[in-house]
Amino acid sequence: MVDSGTEASKKTIYVTLTGLPLSFHFEWPFHQSMSGADFWVLHGDIRLENSEGLHAPVAVNLSVTVHEVLPSLEAKDTEAPVINALRKEVDRRQIEFVKSGKLVPVQFSSRHYDFKRKRWVFGKAGDPEMEALVARKVYWQTRLVGGTAWLGDPTEALYVETTPAHLLDAARKLAEQGLMTVEGERAAANASLMAQAEKFEAEMQKAVEELDKKHAYERG
Image (cartoon, rainbow, N blue to C red; front, top):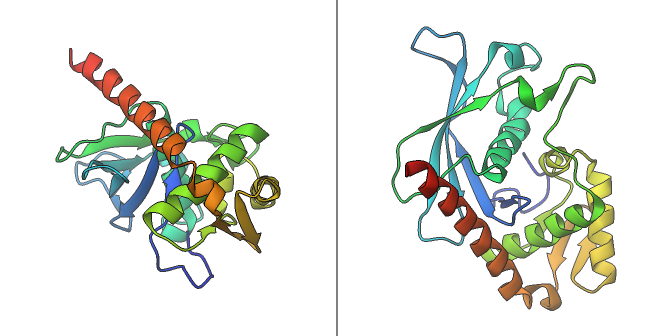
């Protein structure tokens, strides 16, 4: 998503609920499948940050059903749900990160959309999970990119089915603990948060190991 702040040109780190710091690159726009099948495709690459070049090239396959509920196929209308659909696939250990690797098809389907309520659904998180997400987001954004983290990003709120205001409330609770400083919609990590590097690294390593274990088992 586009941030109107002064640091908009910097890479944005999106963190999974299991603690993996990711960045996304897409080759916009969606294009109709050349195979004659009735779906649209968006090629992209998910980078596992803080790793030795691990990534997952993906082909996001947009179904007709979801296409019908989207205002357009432009990035402004699809980037947030696409990022979160991919994050959820990582949460479910369906995506493997490798140093090379072939393109992996990922279904961007109606399972992520509630037609009755006309909204995207990626799994609601409780306040403790949201606070952990915010803490990881601010830590990894600072550690890997520098500057401040944009917590008003609608993509983050959509990921845990809440509002940007609710995420900012979670950030303010962490600020009260001295972990970060919140100004407007942006948060800066304090020394006490950065001092928890060992914890965040361990969470990431555990999540990577769980991913590797799952895919190693499937390969037999």
